[in-house]
Image 1 (spheres, rainbow, N blue to C red):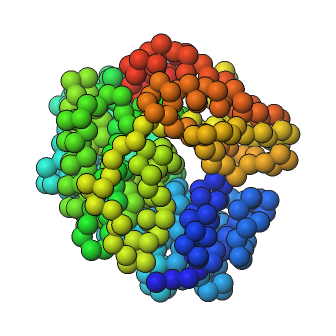
Image 2 (image 1 turned 60 degrees about the vertical axis):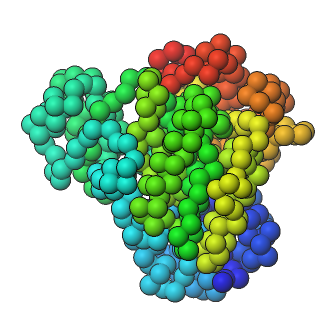
Length: 446
């Protein structure tokens, strides 16, 4: 058990963790960089500590400073949220070595899932379908060419230690491979500190389906059904919905069971997400495992009624999951729109600046997760996410209607944002029919 939690993150997820901690009666510590002293959650935490300058590498990613902040405030546990140190094995080990509870999976799971080739092998051994793919240390052009010819174009190059859509390139032929390989290696080195590259077969019209997992330290693992995450640009998700319009009951059962098998093979003991690709024939393949809470977790909460962050914290306390698989069911349909500070008409260009008007929507079945307010300055130093607008309806059609009304009611001035993009998407007849894929935005909307 612990009584005080350090929140090792910023923005809306820091507020989300804060609220779960308060519901559990836990004290909280907020950390911030020198550029982030005006963050909303810092008004409500019990204590706060500055951990460095604006650069993430010197503040939110500075393991020594984050551990030090926990020690000087007497925090017994650290919740990393998503991004930053959430899937960092070194950080999880540092927490353990300093007598702190890491609110996330054990370091061995992070190690296994942090390397895509190793993760693929574990999943295959657990009976989870995987796409053909290969990796090798210091992959050179000739080896990459040989592997690509064997798999057949198109292929996907991605950083072996990657995540969040970074360090990835679709390659359609040999000439593109020659150009793309050094670029992916450079991105991988910059983002993850390793040039190891993984190559797998690329599915042209795939859908991105992910399954929410909860595991505990008593050997229990359940799933909370799936989320559809195919509306994305450059592998960055823009809209998610649950359940997926592409799955029937049988496919939903099979993909959920496969996700649980994979998580059990890891001895997984926290909230996590098994990500799959679904081809046009309805076959699904393991893509990666995100060993953390996801940005899009609220839509699962909306259709199941389960507080995922609270469950994650209680599991870290050593408690068993409060649910059995048969206790979890789907109630209605939920959609999340990510409202980013970006101008979609200018290639989704980030638009930092001051928010001069902020009036979020409300009403039944509408939820806004955000750290923004009128007068808040959106920094170029960090992620461009302003808010997650989440709605719930009795079915998909009603959820789309409620989302459209909520988007029209949401007023943000001073910076450009993605509300116009989402309104355009929700009028597209192919989206309304549920007929879309991971390349839909890039290939068919622009």
